[in-house]
Image (cartoon, rainbow, N blue to C red; front, side, top):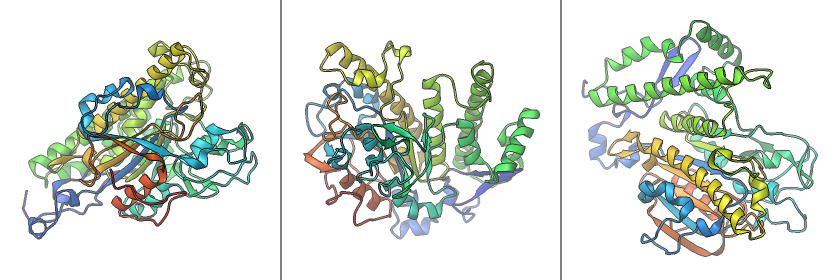
Length: 449
């Protein structure tokens, strides 16, 4: 490659109805003379932020490490992350005070979801007058979104409801949304992997997207077939490393598209579905498709901010594929029954396995001397501690990634009791270049991470 040839960071592959963002390539980075002038390797890559929500708390005995610092053993729930131990930190002691009743009575599941990213008390209503607060992801998207095609990406494995009552007098909007653009405007997450795929790789025209998808299906073409000419032209100008990186990215896109098609074909054969969609029948398959979507979105810098609801708080689905036939929410009210607690731990362990899958995807993507995971900040957990007590302190929280070299993973951090979860968010916003004076009930920034 010509040493002085460089392409803009916001370069896209284009074709009929298709706009495909690219991963960060060496040809997009500042010239060597700029690096020599003081820019670090980490500074050349964007930082990404994602929030992953798990429902109904956790069996904290099997979540919380015994020792503090780097010398700790992973408890049962976190064991699927053993090979990634140096890439995340477990944070104990965080709390969400605004998820507590404060005179509003029952409704902990709705309040937990509504409070998780806002740190604000949700107005108790089952009507249209919902109110909570602006979520941390949207605070970040306000600034980081100026540099990406999508300011933020909201995903879920549960079809949400925006109206009606879902939990003890609380609107369903609280329970099925994590992201809030304003104090009364949620950002509804997308559940259908096909629609997420189209959103990531289409030109944004809904009508044209549907038309072009129909053409691809009719002629059995991939979305990549529409950008082949543009991709070939770009590859001819790239060096070996960038060509290899581009090939890996395009292969990942094609493989994901094929998996979505397979899911659609399976669903279309099921008699209880009127309209075939890309939502897989199998929950574990759905989870992994959505994790793959999020990974590609961050890898391609289509967005730098994402949220993912693995299941809404209060979800009562069974997990027969791991030997748990009881409903999750029902089990969470275990009344200290050891057999029930072990089943909850198995569900928690399953979800951690899916997180490990996602983090592995991020770690497999090279960015300079590091990886995509090194430039991410992934918050994983929920706003309920023990599901039986519905407590909102000492929450199960894990922070993965290095934030571009600004975080110190590989340890168990134990904070003072009742440390606001929003203090963590303030610290992460600084690292995203989107500083805020306050998020919800925050009192200051965390220095321990």
